[in-house]
Amino acid sequence: MSSAAGKVRLRGAPLELATANGHFYELYVADDDRSYEDAVLVGQKVYRRDLVTGDSLLLFQDTVVTHLAGLYGRLHPDDEPLRPTDEPSDDPLWTATSTLDLDEIAGPFVSFSLHIDVERDDAPHWHTSRRGVLDIRTGRPATLAAVTGNAKADVERARTRVLRSTLDSVRASRDERGERAAAMLSYYHLDPASFSVTTVDGAPAIAYAVPGAGGGDAGHLLALAPIPIGEPAWWTEAASTLPVASADGGRDVWRHGAYEVVVRYDAREGGGRLVLRDSTSREWALGRVPAPARRILWLDRPPLDSVSRRALDRAFQESSLYDETVRAVAWRHRAPRRAATPHLVRQRAPRSAAPRLGRA
Image (cartoon, rainbow, N blue to C red; front, side, top):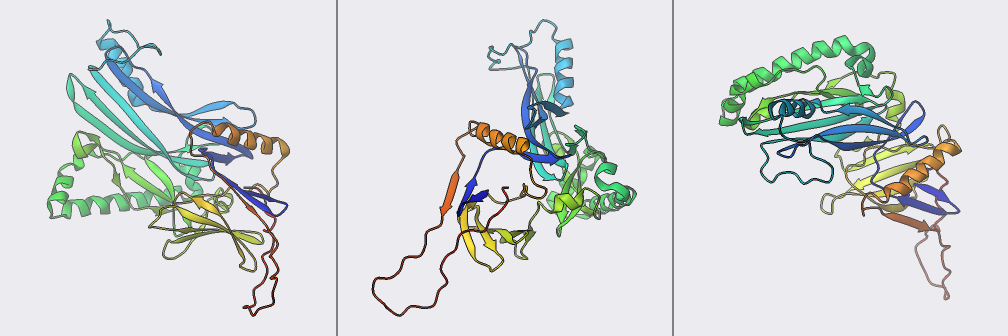
């Protein structure tokens, strides 16, 4: 979003952006296809791409499908790896696919959810799920210490209490669903790295999810209640990108200098209406955005250098080729017309040009 000469421009693009160490990165997920003629084996990878240099760095690779591809190759030495131009078998002996979704971005951390399905001709159907956090700065999975700082020991103790309370609650359930869940607790095992970064009442928190592995419901996650982590060193910068939500959840507000950006959500129509509001509460409608609106990356504090600004603009231009969902809206100021014949009207202040704002 930017303004110039009384015009406000809003543009959308299918681009997942993150900032770390003063750099802008695009985050994207790519397939890791290790299929054979009689096996469909497709994992997932996560990359970060530096918008200035164009260099990509691998942040995460699903190792389960990689391991299964190696196992399949040893058990079926006569099968040939599938070439890029080959079509997979309509009735494969093995199918192993993973689905990875990028979730919330909080400062230099991006959370993800991973689900893997495996079907083999020599074993029952099996699947598993887990969560994780990647450190965009280092290009590696984030440790609990990196996310929580000095609160690491407190979080680990709270995790033990929350896990015990959750398991006791499941075991104490008397309905059919609870009894079924209690019977499957043996399939769940705590993975200290299976957590995500979230917020509770506007403050950072860690949300653990205990992975399950097996058939049916056993392959789903057992989510634990979020654990507050105070305010680590990275939170100050991250907090400026996040909104303040209204009590009823119907509105998000970002405050920045002399103006505010407001999103009002519409449950009936879906999405939200994006509004720019100045210090006198005068508003300018900018367009609609998907719900929920998560972050705003401000480009004026500190000011973005010209090299990074050109790289960011180029990334938006290139991302327009990703799909057909790009939208652009512009607001143009027009001076109020004077009535030709005097008549009584309610006093109303004339519309003024939109306030000058930093590009975001």
